[in-house]
Length: 425
Image (cartoon, rainbow, N blue to C red):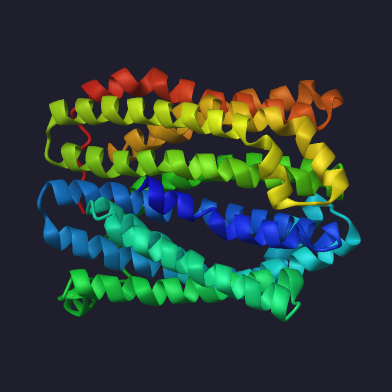
């Protein structure tokens, strides 16, 4: 799962590194803004993966194969429906979001085109999230690794073709990702067919548009959806504030986020393993095993976060030139690099315990702690440190990340003692 997750930010890193070496920072700023918006949009529907993983892992632990198949069919239906709506309303959705961020005129036009192209593959991108979540819930992490590596390789090759050879710049970066999403979906269906020979029969048997069929999924997903919207409100606000400080700050923050994405996806690898293992032990009603998984994943998460912080600290002088040779952005990155070193350690608790609580199906607790971290920590800290500029923004984000882990840890003893996690579909 760590290898699978570390391959995900390569999509954004490749785009950023290639565009960061073009003569104008406008293309990098546009993709930073557009890709950020798309990440936020897709993250807002991240409950499709989390809910699918949680319920699938618990059904897998109960050895309920029919429910495992049913969850895949219903989750795919939900993902394709939501994705179709995003594609249909992509123009007003992207344009309103960009206006709220108020970037420069050139960046605004390029980012709008980038976002609208990317949303053409929204149904398939969301379906890919479901497929990954379903395989993780079944404790099959080899196939997600293959899917993500294949998608990223396709994106890399097409980036080179569209951006460098065809000189399509930021539009080319969007087209490459759309093609990669499409290829990933086709490959995902192939793997489903290979692992579940009766897949077509399950599709016919479980396909439904009735409310009652989706109720268990929607019950767990409603809390995850609110929790994710709170997270996204923080990220959108963060990017909006950066955009108002100019293209150099916007582009520099985008590169910092790409580096932090390496950290977050690496830690999410342990979190996703937690979801599958703890969901399985909860489904099997094995409390002792649940405690062992919580302790083991916690130790690994902390160890990896410290390792990543040390790697970032030792590699500053070659990492920054890898992303850009634009002098103004390079100088800006050197000033804010300490935040990159600190954030892996500050945010580790949030990633680890997210996986624990998702596996146990405790989505309501995740919603409560996220609301606290956003509205009691992030926004007040930002308000009090506005005079610090971009450093104040990063301080607010860092304390928000720390709060996520601490607030979930408060509820951890209750989760361990609770016997009512059992869910069915």
